[in-house]
Length: 349
Image (cartoon, rainbow, N blue to C red; front, side, top):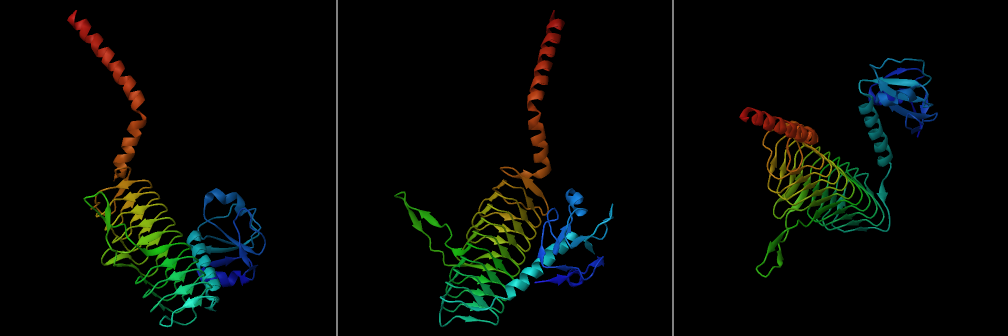
């Protein structure tokens, strides 16, 4: 597909400097983009490439002042990075919307229903009473269990497994290999040392505008629902246990794990490889640093924590700084002890 600078500027509400009819048909990184490609400039570290790139069109901040002439057409916007993200989203949306129809072989139960302009890829399974909204795209090898509902404009990528009774909202994306609604880790210890499985009869509810990364797993609730609220973003390789709630517009990075029945507030940011214990509450807008271990509730909104066990970020940084100086401090303390002993000896004598 080919677009002009003028068409792109209209999408991102930008102002053109240069040839408004400059054509682009692909995207490129600023350091190696070619003619008829579009790129963006947002990070000052790449400034040298701004003047050497061969890209036909560059999205750039309206506040940036050029230090030398440039041959590319510029589209100036308040935030170049955000504008580029919006443009890529629109481009992906156009490509995805071209997909429609039902590929074969696939299995669709007679009681399943779907809206207009859906795409169901080959080797997909749709169970009893499945309901798909308008413009929803199900890519090949996906499994959609009985009584699952998926809202409008959602995308289910290849190999996703959604177990029975789960609810997926509109404008939600679930990436390849994710498993939604598998059993929670519920086992009751027995007197003989064994474990009695606790049936997991709840479901998973994923609301609107959520994105779930590849190979992430979200367990169904024991009773009730595991809930991912609207706008939440989950990276790849995350484990969400049974009866967890993730609040609106929270974001969790890769390899983090959240134990059962923990409630995460809105706007929470959780770094990669962080671990949260079960049955705790995390207040709104809390930031949890990567590899932190959180084993008790964080009740104060907006704080940042780090470490294992995680505690106040500022205090933790001070502790780390002190720890680095411990060898020198030990040396100084020994010198002071020697001096004190000498002074005492002189006084006694």
